[in-house]
Amino acid sequence: MNEQDSESWDSFRESSAFEMAIKTAGSKAAVLGILHEHDLSEDAFTNRFPVLAKVAQGLPDVPEEAGPPV
Image 1 (cartoon, rainbow, N blue to C red):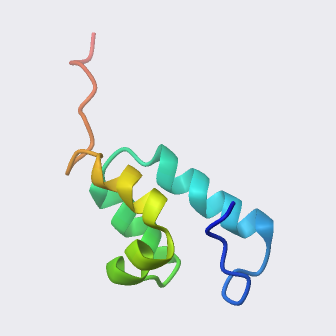
Image 2: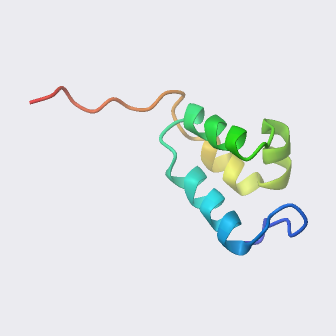
């Protein structure tokens, strides 16, 4: 991962888990929760991880609802 900041991430595994969590988030709200868990502000996220920030920008504001129960 090119955007890894070796001073603030303990390991490649941790940064990979962070990247995967952002890429699989279902909404912008979920991304905000992930940032909160990692004690990372939105501005810091955008500056340090611009590619992931673009991924997050394309997400819906709220998760898409599943169809009605059958």
